[in-house]
Length: 233
Image (cartoon, rainbow, N blue to C red):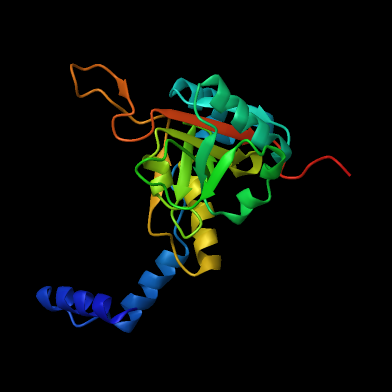
């Protein structure tokens, strides 16, 4: 516990007239935290097999106005990105998260794609990021911040492309949080920010009409890759 946090908690204890927990109470509290029960989880996606869960994720994402391309292997990603940008009449220029997982993709096979790695800036039109997990029951992306995944990439560009591997798709939000806690325990702490993204940014504040891109990207394109490894030998 850092010094500033310790001072804040000490001030709260003083205001409540408490000096600290009795040893028995502290032991009971720690035991309860270690053996917390799982909340009631919707059965909607939990009961589905892998193929049906992927199909549900894609269906729910598309119902939220995202677009989804299903790919067999990571080697197909550069061509899919180039094809999507061409179909949308967008420039073949994007900013990409400096994530090692993305660096394994053979971008050099599509030299016409201009890729800059790093944070998004005000004039970046298109970003490409990985995700941490994807929620099948709502078609939602779970994005965590970090040195390799700057949060600006999720909100500044007008078009956001997200790479999702099939093994990242979980049934429910609860399962996503379980995965995040496990990753945090291994990494030594939780990320500063976790964003849940369902479809493009939208608002209905103006005359009760839905407008896309009000507070973030107006296009969300998901590249859903079935396998992390190529079948080539």
